[in-house]
Amino acid sequence: MTHSFKLSRRIARLRLPLFAAAILTIVACETTDSLDPDTSSPAPTASDPGSEIGVLADSSVQADSPGGPLLASISYAGGIPMGLFHLPDGDYGSRYNGGLRTASPSYLLSNLAAIKSRGGKVVLSLSGSQKYYKDADGHFSFTKWKARVDRFRTVKFSSYVTDGTIVGHYLIDEPYDPANFAGRPVPGATLEAMAKYSKQIWPSMTTIVRAEPYLIKWSGTYHYLDAAWAQYLYRKGSVSTYLSKNVTYAKNMGLQLVVGLNIPGGGVNNGTMTPTQVQSWGTTLLGSSYPCAFLSWKHGYTYLTTTSMKSAMDVLRKKAQSHVNKSCK
Image (tube, rainbow, N blue to C red; front, side):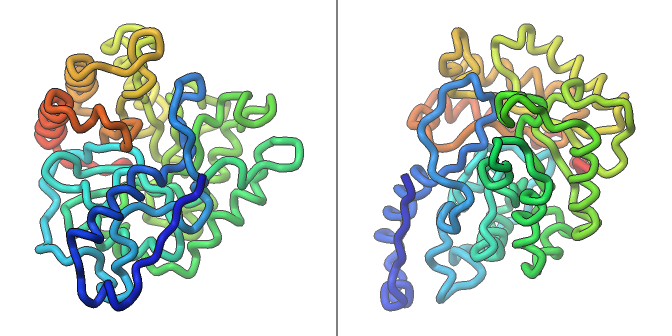
């Protein structure tokens, strides 16, 4: 289901913050994309990420305040970004300073300004939902994928790449899974071609694929792809073994590594992770100095608002912030 609304210029000028915040909070909780980090894990029905209304929070104020929300600027606190998929602009701050955003050409600059003003960093998905870059048979279409990326050629966001607000370009989700592309996985050579295409447009922007490195290993060498992604679930076995395997493969393949958790579907029997599990497993993942970001699936669940889960996330934020600040490039 697609949700949209537009505050009138008159309301924007009057800046009724409490009213606007309430509406934006509702929309932020309901406008998420379908970048499911594990297709076997349950997740709520998501709205269409390719629609230009799939942006979250604060975009409605851009008519009168192009820089996003009227806040005192907060500097990035250091370490590696820690946060959630689909994190609304307004939730960047003391608990989360990292996220993944399905970008909209219309609102990207205002979103980036808002995120930066709150001391945050973000991974951008420019291509959106997989359905927009599949052919009639359900297979991956490089031509359609490039067309989705090309929508951003005229958006001048390079300064956010330079200053580190943009962690990287999220090229594709689970390319190795045949279920995603009608029985035909996306091969390593194509992933490298996608990364090269991105670099031809934005040479300094990091390229990221959401896949464990060993699942996208191929006969060639990645020169344009910068980073892989290890999203832990309980069914993957020991978290320390999982981490060690992914770090080893990433190093051997010349890739950086983003880590995180599948919180709603990665617990025992594909259930929700408990706060204790989130803190314990997240702490293990952050025990390595190799990861360049810690981003978990996903914002929008009420259990994230419990005191115990907030406490667990605060612990992980401190762990992430204690890391040496490093690029995913």
